[in-house]
Image 1 (cartoon, helix red, strand yellow):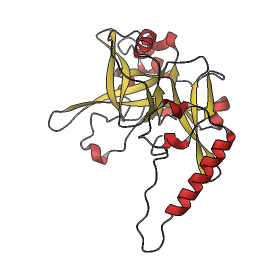
Image 2 (cartoon, helix red, strand yellow):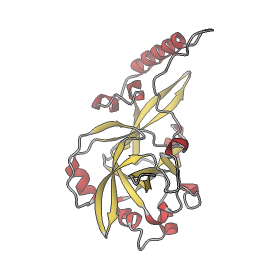
Image 3 (cartoon, rainbow, N blue to C red):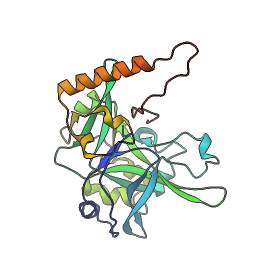
Image 4 (cartoon, rainbow, N blue to C red):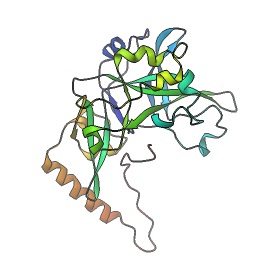
Length: 259
């Protein structure tokens, strides 16, 4: 799954890795969440370009976005057939640069976040699809969904879904919507090989979208995990509604409608 991810590599390093012509300058981001603008690599007129698009795909046929479920991910298994994605897999394939992502694993009464990143360092390219939604007043919004597939190996212990990572040698095939058909591109949608990614537990501070700093990806010790778990349990107990009282709000735990 991919409901939060990071981009920590320098803009020049990402530009070199993906070979686009633009020279954008953007800060490191440690807790990118759905509905936010994210960097995307596309091919336009035969040239790789850098673009910003909103994370959460809106198919072109949607009339009212307020009544449409946010599509932040697309399942590889059904992407060729689903109405929301079948045109995009043919004509609008793209890559999302990333240096890692977060996953939440059930641990007793709470969910422990983990940071998952390439063993050899980033950035990597997540397979993604995009659409331009045109509103009733002619406004245009470029939107995107990251492709996921069934997890395998050790990653399956964290969650049953993983974002699809396209190998650098296959970037050109994935991005070439003119000469590479959807079925051929679909064959690239595989889970990462065992050992490509490693992971470690991180602070539950990542649960809050407002937090965005380098501390979020640092490993925490078992003692810190236990302390955060106790604090979380106490907070949940305190916020449990009582009769005739207004229910208390809770922090975003990163586990919304992701897949």
